[in-house]
Amino acid sequence: MQSPRRNTEGRPLGTCDPSSSGSPAHGGSSRFEFQSLLSSRAPGADPASARLRASESPVHRRGSFPLAGAGSSLAPPPQVPEEDRIDLNPSFLGIALRSLLAIDLWLSKKLGVCAGESSSWGSMRPLMKLLEISGHGIPWLLGTLYCLSRSDSWAGREVLMNLLFALLLDLLLVSLIKGLVRRRRPAHNQMDMFFTVSVDKYSFPSGHTTRAALVSRFILNHLVLAIPLRVLVVLWAFILGLSRIMLGRHNVTDVAFGFFLGYMQYSIVDYCWLSPHTAPVLFVLWNQP
Figure 1 (cartoon, rainbow, N blue to C red):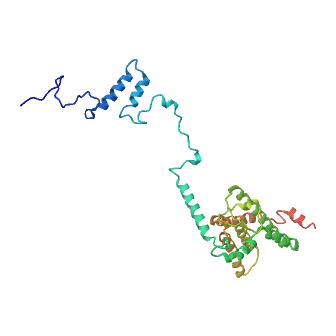
Figure 2: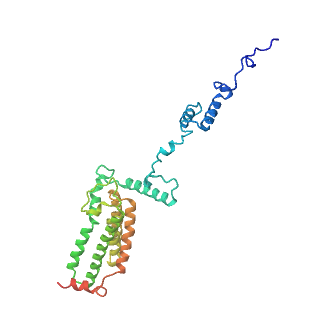
Figure 3: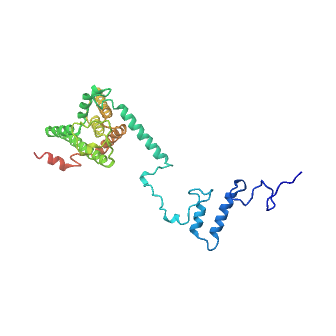
C-alpha cells in the first residue's frame, strides 16, 4: 500500500493547517481575536488600530465590548419623575382605598338614573329637583329668620335662634370641607342647580344631606309631633339624600358622609345651646325693636 502523499512540510495532503485563520473547525476566528488582543496589549502598539482590529473580529458584537473611551461621552439615562413612576409594591391601605373609590364611582353612576332627561328615570327629574329645593340652605335661612321675627314667645325664639345657629354652622363647615377636599362632582351631573356659589362646584360632602340630617334631628328633638309626622321627617331626610345620587349631583360616599356630618353637627349645637342665660346679649339685641 502506498503511503499518503505529503506536502513539502512533511504533512499529509488533505489535512488543514491548525494555524490557518480561515478554518472554523480549528477555531481560526478565535485565534485571530486572541492575536488581535495580544497585539493591542503589546508595548508600542497603536490603540486606534487595536480597537479597529477588535471591531472587525467575527465574534465581536455591538454593545458586548464597549470601547473604553465611549463610556465617558455617553450621558446617563434621564430619571423618571416621581409622580410618573409605577409603585410595584403598593401598601394594603392604598389598594383598599383605590378599590373603594372605584366601587363608589361605579355605584354612583349606576344609581344616577335621573341625571338627564334621557336617563332611565328621566321623567322623575322634576320631582327630584323639587326635593333639591326643599333642602337648599337659602329657603331654610329665610324661613327661620321670618319665623324668628314673628315669634312672640321666649321659648319659640330660643328654639329658632338655635336653628339659625345650626344652619349657619352647617354652611360654614360644609364650605370649609369642600374647599379643603376639592372633589369634583360626578361626570354625568348637569350643573342646573337652583342656586350655586363658587364652592358648589365641589362634591364632598353633600350640603343638602348634611342639612337634611341636621334639621330632621333638630325637629325630632324640639318639636312635639305625632308618630306619622316623625316618620315623614325621617323619610324626607333619607329620600333627599338619595335624590342627590339619583340626580347625579353627588357620589355615594358624599351622601354617606353628609348624613354623618349632619348628625354630629346637631351634637355641637346641643352642646353650645344658646339661651338667655348662656347668650343674653343676643336675646337682648333681638328684643330691642
